[in-house]
Length: 103
Image (cartoon, rainbow, N blue to C red; front, top):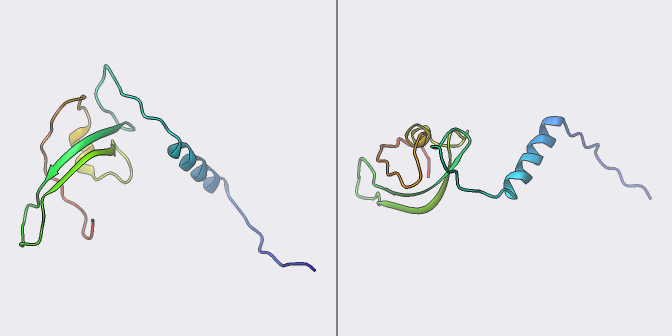
């Protein structure tokens, strides 16, 4: 008995994406000393926030130990713009405008 199976085609881009995903899953983060944050670095941050416009349903936000990739493709631009150049222990205050529908 023979079973029919579809031919699976994988291109170089898909292989590279899968390899990057595995690398990220197994990555170890080490503190950066002697320089400030730059694109490609990850910042571990605690955040407190409140909505600018409160319609009565919005709640303040507090998050600890959030990893933020400076200059990352999924990083909200305000985080990159305001954290680039920061050093460990710095505190920054800035407004963030999230895209429509962002959680």
